Image (cartoon, rainbow, N blue to C red; front, side, top):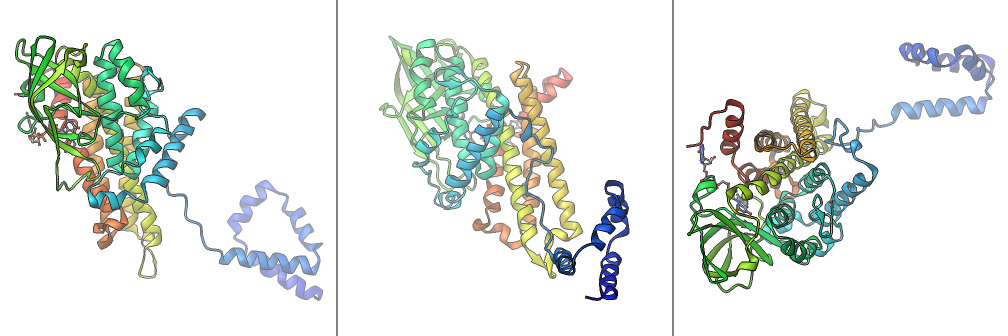
Length: 452
Ligand SMILES: Cc1cc2nc3c(=O)[nH]c(=O)nc-3n(C[C@H](O)[C@H](O)[C@H](O)COP(=O)(O)OP(=O)(O)OC[C@H]3O[C@@H](n4cnc5c(N)ncnc54)[C@H](O)[C@@H]3O)c2cc1C
């Protein structure tokens, strides 16, 4: 290559350089020295550099990582807790994601996952003793989010067993009851359910339970019906809440599945959380020994203590459902092309994505603080209720926008998002509807109870 050819080539390179970028570069390197080095390069190296620069120009832009954790809350976990979170994430991605739609469609529960889930060693995560890890409510929240991010049914199954059923025994059981049941439930050798709602009494359970119990000798006789009871078609035990005919107070009982007075029928044809097996339970002169009455459940206040703890978990679940939907949608918009380019590049699409991310980030930071209050022993009913109301409302909006971004594919089960849209409806209603949780917050901030 002649001097003039080399010079023309270098001039070509320099002309193609963005002067703003050169300005920035000049602050970091000695440009004179750099040009001196280029001038000393052999023809072969110079040609190689030109090829590399040209290849760089044609290189496809890499999309940023798809993540709903915009404020990097995951990074605030300790190394040990982060490991647990990632273990759950990997379980959900490898064992649940591939089968979720199939089981949702069949409305079956994948029983084979129970021993696999047991290996995660995460049941009763926040309880002290009885084989439980004594971890923070914050970590438990992250786990609920990780599960719902992939499938809300599995997260509900887990929440009912580990939160509502184990929690009732942990908070309302005697020492002997805790020693007997909790280690088995922690290892998932025994699965639990929680029976509070009735066919005619949902929001009004605090004062209106119609299921009754009566002590006869050293046995209790239970009569009535329970509706919507998750896991109860196959659970080993169901915690049944009933009103004592003698003192009108609510009591809790550990009822075993083979009790002759206990019948659990699967509720069919749900349009949400189809993997969760909800049961209609009928108790007909169901005899329960005194030793299986929760010894420290003396009124509905004790039931409410359990619900306060699990309501915070449902808010985290809503975050997970929203996060999963946002990530599915973002991923789809990067791949789906219309008018010759990914739809992620359209302004109106980005507007929807940013609206979703704003909601999601607000939800995440809210439940994060909620768990800090819980860990500090300062969680009040109204704190959990506000998070449940806000997060489930925003979750509904996120799944709606996400489904919109999928166009027609948004209503096909194979694209996953349809399952998220449907499942969000159940999360929106259970553990206290929007209205009931709003009334709880309204009472706290005004000092006036608007409950009838
Ligand atoms: C998928 C699923 C799983 C569930 N799992 C369980 C479980 O495992 N165990 C269990 O015990 N329960 C469970 N539930 C029951 C759940 O907690 C109830 O559905 C919920 O508490 C609402 O009760 P309800 O459905 O009877 O509605 P209702 O109480 O009949 O309410 C109907 C409507 O009236 C409104 N309303 C009621 N009272 C008032 C008021 N005072 N002011 C304003 N509005 C009012 C409600 O907000 C709602 O919009 C589950 C429910 C679902 C959907």
